[in-house]
Every structure is written in structure tokens, then in C-alpha cells.
Length: 550
Ligand SMILES: Nc1ncnc2c1ncn2[C@@H]1O[C@H](COP(=O)(O)OP(=O)(O)OP(=O)(O)O)[C@@H](O)[C@H]1O
Ligand SMILES: O=C(O)[C@H](O)CO
Image (cartoon, rainbow, N blue to C red):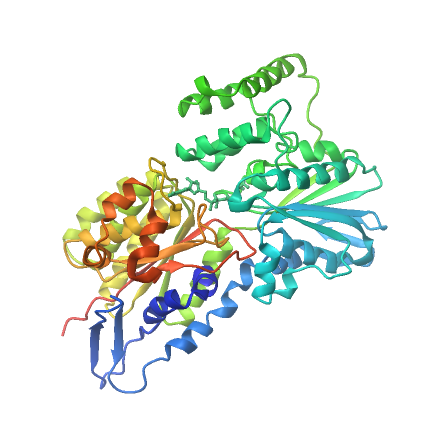
């Protein structure tokens, strides 16, 4: 909740929906107090109000969400990871001598705030820096008065914006070239601090000649559209790049390299986050071909790409002697989705909701993920016999959506207890990155598509579900749209029908953004703008309390 309610709630209309969620009083009322359940017919949000005493003020609840993003703010994360003791820099229990020898580069959606904090910490030991950040991020942060995430006018760090709509472009390519030049100019006396966060792959494009930027962009676009995972995507990107897969660290050699990584990939694999520019990796060309074949891309690849893959294959055969040198590289993960979920959980608790963290690793096809959340909602709302059957179905689907069985069992047990205690509403939290296989030509993103599909599942539930669902990208951007995600509930199907919107048609065309923009004048969209951080997506199911037996 910290991410979505603080960031995403920036949209007033969305705030209203979540405010109504926050109106719920969770604690058992005093014995002499009568309780009532309301179903708010206009917003479909349910409310549980005490008829005695004042009901909570939605606006105050909303503003109390503000501090909850602290945990995943890039400046805070760097402050925790980087310490200065006199002329020494401490990172992950390693010490580095500072003698006006520190250079800084960064790429990704969160690195501006990271860089601002790093410069404050290292002070005049910083010689120079360059960060490659998303187009428009400085303006957005100014707009939200996030001065702590912006650089001072006297900063030694150059900010280069690029990669509009998260796609590598010539601006990002220029930034990558400048970063490459900076790294290549270093000596063994120097220390290179590399700030890395999600979105870094698009912000550091340096295709291996003769592959052009357009060709590389097209290969990754087609892979993503076919539903390739980020692991697969970045495995291919690494092979076609001069800087990814350890290329940047190679350029900086013999300087000491320290990579501070804000993870946006499940399991925090440092060699894949932003395609691992500081992690020596030897991707086998066979693996790359396997991925390209899996998505039927091999036959239609540009000749330049085939040429580069063939070159790598012959180099790999002849240069086993050229083993990677890791000695002067330190990579450390300084933050991830888990922190966002923990923050959200704390906030939920403060609001009187019962937080349950499911997993930070939800992945897989968006359809399966939607079905999974639909089942979880039904399970939480069905005490008794039918829940046994639902439990089996959920346990069967779990592995397909990246949730481990121990995580699931723990969650199901908690939901069951919730049913027995009837008055408590639950805020089920999860994170991750599902995939969408694009078949249509519409505008959307995986969060909006997931929200729409979960809404449909909730609409189809036998017993009218009063669950609400939210899915949002913590970076504030969901696919190539202005939205971060959307909020839905079980009334979405009837609402859409009454407004002449055919959900199936929108889904077939992967047009979730257009759908949510049209539905109730965009009320369900989350529109925070770029948030300046990036730790994958956050999903939230608000499961209503069951009416207590009278
Ligand atoms: N019309 C659409 N409907 C649904 N999903 C879409 C649509 N267009 C693109 N996507 C999905 O959006 C994803 C890209 O989303 P986004 O730009 O938010 O990237 P991201 O994975 O969060 O980026 P990064 O990891 O680089 O921060 C792709 O996986 C793609 O499948
Ligand atoms: O930039 C990227 O490659 C993705 O955000 C994953 O880290």
C-alpha cells in the first residue's frame, strides 16, 4: 500500500476509491455498540461503520499514507547503503579509500534520487558523474517538490534524459556513449560508483556494431510482445550490447567498481537487473538462440544480429583463456520489492487492516495471475466446505504464478483465520511482474490488464464479491501509457455494460488503458506520474470482513 496509496493515490479520483477502502473500521466494536455493513452502490466499495461515534475521516486517512513510501525512496535506500567515515567509504562491510578519486555513473528510473544522495554523502571526493534517467523525470520530481531527489545547481553530475516511454532512443544512446567514455578514462587510482535500477536497460543502449539501435529495439520489442520474461529479454540484450553483461565494468578496468543496485527483478539476480553492466557474465550463444527460437524470432532476425551472435560463438570457442576478472568489482543489492511490501503492510496495520504478505515473486501469464487472485478472493469469502476445493485449486495454480507452496500455505491459513474472526478485513499484498502476450494493437500495460482481468474474475464469482483489487507499477508507468495501473472490483462488468463498453473486446485488443480511460471518466486509473523509484509492481486485494454470525 505504501507505494500505491502514497504514489498512486496522487490521482484524486483513485484516492476517493481507496479512501472508501480506508473507511473500514477493522477493530471489533465494543460489545454494546451495534454494527452495520454498508455496500456503497456508487463506488462499489464496502464500508463497515460503527453507528455510534464518528466515522473515520477519509481525507485524514489518505494523507496519513504519505510517509509510507519512505522505505523505497532511492535517497533513503542509498543513505542506508553508503556510509562515509572521514576519507573512507563503507559499502556492504567493504572499505574504499576516498582521495578525490570518485566518479559516478547511473542509469535507471530511480538513479536520480540515488545520485543526489550519493553526492551529498561523498561530497568533494566526487570528481564527475553522469546519470541516464527517464525523459521528464526532473520536471515530475520538481512538480512533486521532491528536492531531495534532485541535484543541486552546483552538482558535478550531469543529468541526461532519454528513453521516452521506456524505449531505448537516440538520447539514451548518447547518454550510454558518454557513460562509456567516462568509464574508459579511469585509472587504477579511481573508484567508479555505479548506480543501477530498473529501466536501466532502455537507458543504456549500446548495440554491438553492426547492429543498429532500431534493430536492437525491434528484437526486444518483439520478444516483449510475445510474452518473453524479463530474464529472457535481458539475456538477449546482454549478448547484443557493448555495456551490458559486464561491459561497463570492462571499460572501467582497472578502476575499482562499486555497483549499488535497486532490484526490479524477482529474486534479485544482479547479472540481469538492467542487464548487469557491472556483472561479468558469459551468456552462451546457445541460450540466446533457444530464447529466440522459443518466440519464433530466429528466422526473421536482422542479418546484423545473426552476425554478432556468430561472432560471439566463435570468440567463445577460441578464448576460454580470457576468463572474467571480478576482483575489483563489488555489486550489492540495496533495495527490492520486499521493502515496498513491508512498508505497505505496516501502513495497512496502522489503518486497522490486517496485512498479509503473500509473495514478492508473482509472475507468469497475466491471465493465470488474474485467475489466481480471483480464487484467493473466493477462498477468503467462503468459510466452510467449499473452501477446501478452492484451496486445492489455488495450490495447483500457485507454482504457475511464481508463488511458492510454503508462501501459499501460510497465506491460506491466515485467510482462514480471518474468516473465523469475521470482523477483520484483510489487505493481501504481493509484488512481482506478470507478463502479457500482446495480440492486439491497443494501449495498455500489464497492471491495467491484470486489474481488468481480476475485475472480471470478481464479477463472475458466484457470490457477488466485495473485494477490491489494485495493481500498480511502482515506477508510476505501466507499459507505454500515462497510467501506473488501475483499481477494480466485482462491479466492473455491470458498470462497463451500462456504459456501453465491451470488456472482452478491449482485452482482445490489449487496450486496457483505453478501457479504463473511458470507464467512469477514468476514475479507476492510477495516474501519479513518474515516481522516481522502481521495484516492480505491487498488487493489493482488500478482502472484506465476513458479516459476523448474529
Ligand atoms: N497494450 C498493452 N497491454 C498490456 N501490456 C502491454 C501493452 N503494451 C506493452 N505492454 C507490456 O508492458 C511491459 C512494459 O512495461 P513497462 O514499460 O512498464 O516496463 P517495465 O517492465 O516496468 O520496465 P522496466 O523493467 O524497464 O522498468 C511489457 O512487458 C509489455 O508486454
Ligand atoms: O532495465 C531492465 O532491464 C529492467 O528494468 C530489469 O531490470
